[in-house]
Length: 178
Image (cartoon, rainbow, N blue to C red; front, side, top):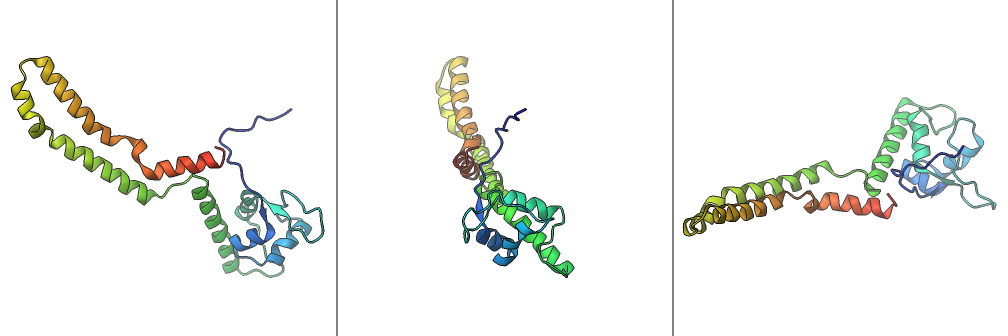
């Protein structure tokens, strides 16, 4: 039975052994030896010609690290093991940012604060801005219309679509096919 592919998947690029080694802070020889070890990650695509590197999915390699895989041979110090896991976590965060799944919380917070401050200032200035118009208008309908337009302008500042951090993340997700 065929499984339906989830629409939430990001098309993950296959990386050569050298790039996997560089992202994880390992030697290329260490990554090159993985296909011959039983408990190590397996390449997504094995090289067909001698001398060509295997291709890997970073997410699969990171999953092996999370499960306790240690990429060094004989004796491994706990510090090296922690370092490898830390590097795997950093590589995963980097992929999340580049694929648009993660955004910088501080940057998003600063943009949201500016948006809220701008809307607050417009709402606070509403009284003095429309006082003369309201005084000159004769009917309740005209007053209601003036207030409605001014309040809508102030609330338009709270449009989430104006957040450039989220816009960048949406564009990245679109580029990665999500």
